[in-house]
View 1 (spheres, helix red, strand yellow):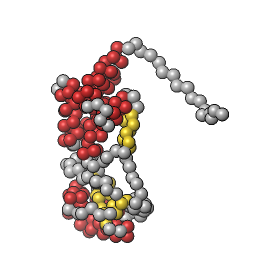
View 2 (cartoon, helix red, strand yellow):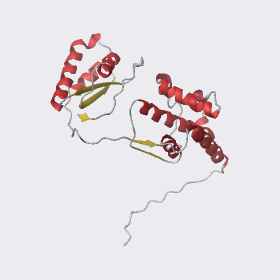
View 3 (tube, helix red, strand yellow):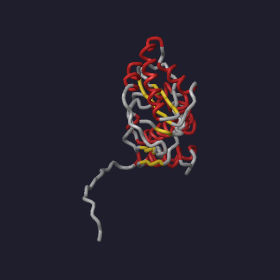
View 4 (cartoon, helix red, strand yellow):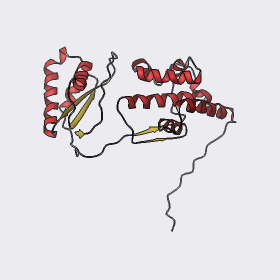
Length: 235
């Protein structure tokens, strides 16, 4: 929708043809912003064959001054960009507050090959993962994340890996200007939220998470029971 906000829209330049690109737009009024959407759609229709989508997004972000009313189109092709730009957008109050909450999952959400694309295309993400590996003394940390081995089934290895991926992804988002108003996590995810909130440092958190995983790995297998009940109000 049309939003007046101080949020930074970031254009990531990549050669990956499957990547989505952000086309940020802004104007002084809501009416002017709608006009800019239509103007950009017409320009892409007329010159789309000679334009590169990454360059269009980069120019819109770096070469244009951000104004009060803002909008963004996320697309993978010129045709998709035109289609979205020509759609009507619902307006929102220019002075309404917008905030972001980051939610971090616990063990069990990991999967083989996760973060492979981010490691290959985002240097900031890869750098943070490498830092996590250095703290843990694991030179093969990045390879362990993207490998096709079944090591992610091991609690001792899965927990520090999942922590690092979640931390690095949040760190990447914040480097793009996304500032969370709140953070919450489940189980292992609580450690990520706490670390990002400054409860303890990354250097303290990672060895703790690794030790936690090793201790849990040594525990005897168990079972989990969930009991569903109807909420009742006590009088």
